[in-house]
Image (tube, rainbow, N blue to C red; front, side, top):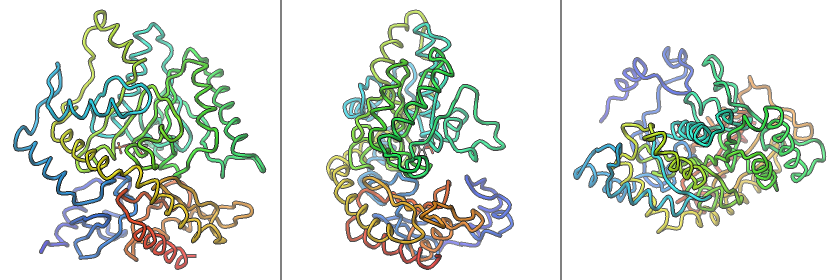
Length: 456
Ligand code: PLP
């Protein structure tokens, strides 16, 4: 038996937890930590013996589900054989070369090379440096600004945190970093004028992007970064025509497109990548989360042919590509990713996310769309969200002090369901492991419905 009290005390006195109200936690006012002790399939267990359906796959990452021994064995095999060697100056391992080759074959756009990191944040940091490097090397040293979207989420480090378009990630942290500019969110429900169609709204967002590029001056704008489906900012699939309109503007001004596939990649939307689903042709692609299903940390910045060609061409002049981490291409992480992608392919998890995902979207709509306090039910594949409002006619929001989203999420947790209160508005978010069954989807939707009825 583990000593729950001792773990809680040790944790409280020493761990600086992300996204946690420090004083409430330190003084015990927000209760004890949840000590997570195990996971199997779509469920996790805590130290008090409670079991929860994890309908958020950790943080949208455990796509293959918990407890897959095949991945644990691949990790152990690599650790026994060679736990670590670096990849500087052309060192490699069999697992890394295999992984990199398969990513180049499967990634969207015209992938050429893969740079490995450890998190979505550092991969997006790398993408920013690649944009700057590329434009320096091709003699466009002013073309450095990066445009991202309001409500986009790209990480928490200095540049990726600045790309993130929610002010509470910037406050008191001296972000955003100069040279990162934001444009409007692709959120039809909140952003459209009365009666404006999705198509017209998409055209307006593209026109606003063009105005921004012109205002900033096109020869200073290097890249646009976006998630194919807006994730942490509200789980919002793009409105019709959005990506077509946006890409036309980017091409007109020679602005690189970075597709942040950290959530969408490897099947989440029902296609291999969000870019595949929405016909996005990115120059640079960021992946993390689903790449290893969270079993070990790994991310990648996938570099397209256009950018890479300039880098290679300039190499005799500028010398080595001077960027890399001790753990870039870590062999254990590469072995884990290969084992995870073997499962994703063998079990056809993208197809599964499409079919089970369609059942999920239907069930969510059936159970929630008619409720008076529901403004919108939305999603794609195995990503879904319910947005709660005080008045669905006027779209008046609930008073934030009521913490409606957080209370529903808490009520769900008390019933054994983890569904996330999204950080922006009263939104309950879902991203279950892609191995979830239709019967489990029904259970998830019923538990969420019961929790909602309990609170409102
Ligand atoms: N990009 C997207 C779209 C994300 O959702 C996240 C994390 O949720 C990140 C980047 C940052 O990844 P990480 O938390 O691994 O740094």
